[in-house]
Length: 322
Length: 296
Image 1 (cartoon, chains in turn yellow, red):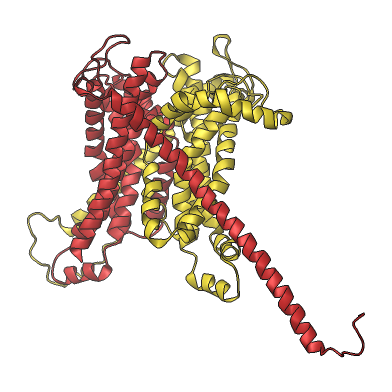
Image 2 (tube, rainbow over the protein chains, first blue to last red):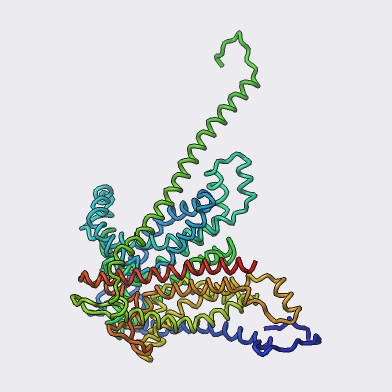
């Protein structure tokens, strides 16, 4: 680092006892920064090192195999990868339109006076621990799904084949819905922020051209915030992919590929959390490797999301829900 | 045209009327479309608010009956034995979180200050790393805690603190940077001209406090990292080098129990956690607002 703040010739003011010398101050900052960077590297390296035995004894094919049967040495990860993406897809498909509509309402439709209060409420809900959502899903929502929601969906949409099998309550659908509720605050808070930074001149210009309020939103505001919105959705997707306890509580934890939205399934995080305690040897290494797969997916999704949000609206957007 | 020939029509008037009609029709159509679409936005808002409010309402309704003196002063008991509480989990959560805060807050704020004062590649890379770290799956942080601490020293509250600190660290870094960056450059320069080195810290205080409280709120609710690091403990344990219980892991395990009394305890613990997290989140906002006002 280069120190440029004090010309060498200038008389230095008397040092107060409590203040570090300038060079020392900078050194402390740099050391702390290096420590955090080292921690991140340590994290990544130790994950890779611990996962390696799985790859060296089993190769790579187990990642796409279908059978999870540790007692017979079968470690197919495919059901869990599919489960992770299916649950996330359900959550995102619900959250994108509803989150966007909510963000538009919060940014442009709700009267000024109510705006701050409603926005704060939504942000506060992002702070509620995920295990609480899981508890609510398992105890309150699962019986409702079993007795009402799933029979209804089966009778209406049964012809699609997506709702075959018994009504379990717990399963892919419930996990997706719980995740939807959980990622909604994140999605809404960030979307609202990026929608609000669309230049006012453009909005006023559109109004002057005779656009209706919806046309302003549809043709000016949303396209103007496009990459930021994409970032918000990607960020929420990342959160959904990595969610562990809420999903583990409501997904039913079945190591088979789900053939219906009502089937119990499992995700990579739920696999890890459910099997970690009893695993040793190869199985433990496989769980580490599954964690590594999840980490790589998580880092990739988050990098893309951050880049999109940053390039759209600066790096401080969505600070309230981090 | 098949208009009556004996009344010649001015083509300009004709055209104007046609345009007017078309415009009115278009406006009517667009207004209707606008009304429908905006209505859908309002409906989305309603759909978003209902489940979120329902969660809070249920936690209060189901959790409050679990609260009594024993709940806060006694440790957990097996199913069917009355008089149990969550004291051991409260102690565990407080000890684990306190240690995590003690390390993550000073370190995170220092790095935040570093990022606020530096530009260039390394700082940008670190900023990006911190942002990506806020979003990585927390279960992988649990695995890291297991590899780094549990493998070497066994299950313990400290291993949990390590993992929770790791979760909080990037949040504090970025919140700290945002707060320190918000200090006006002119103020900084004026102070330096007067002989002080930095005035960043007091001016940034509201932002710092908000960020730290939010990070604590986040750390308190993290469950997955603790499931892999602290093992759980049905007895009261103050010593962080030993396995401990915590509120989130207790909620996780008790909610899966077939016994109504244990599920009841889970609801009570969930209410406690939600109340604390909401107090921290709301408090941070109120405090930040007040400090900001005072400064003006």
